[in-house]
Structure formats: structure tokens, C-alpha cells
Amino acid sequence: MSNATDEVAQDQLRSFVERIERLEEEKKTISDDIKDVYAEAKGNGFDTKVLRKVISLRKQDAQERQEQEAILDLYLQALGMAASL
Image (cartoon, rainbow, N blue to C red; front, side, top):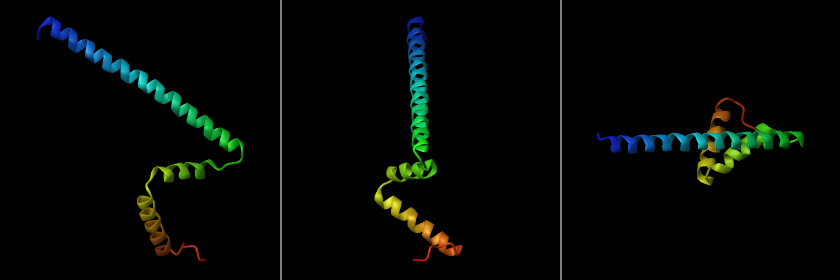
């Protein structure tokens, strides 16, 4: 490789590394913000385990959620843990 090509590759590499580092810092900041919101919710009496589950469920589409609920119900029934209505 020529010297100019080496410089371009080094500049690209440096650019990628610096972008990744900035994004990692943003990710840490966002993660800290999310922890703060959960702490605030807990301070207001909300159960954070349930809140995390709600967030997880909202990420799923309706079909995926129904399939998981059906499998969970099946497993609970097999273990004799199904809620009786």
C-alpha cells in the first residue's frame, strides 16, 4: 500500500473508533437515565420487576405475546400451577 492509502485507512480506523467511543458514552448516559426513571418509579410505589416486564411485553407484537402466554399457560398447567378461574 502506498503512504497515502495507509493514511486514509488509519483515518478511517480512527474515525470508526471515535464514533464507537462516542456512541458507547451515549449508551452509558441513556442507561443511567433509564436506571434513574426506574428508581423514581420505585420511589413512587411501583414494582420495578413488573414495570420491566410491561416494557418487555410492549416491545413484542401481539402475536408473539399471545404465543408466549399460551406456552406459559401450558407449562403452568403441566406443573399444576395454573390459576383456577
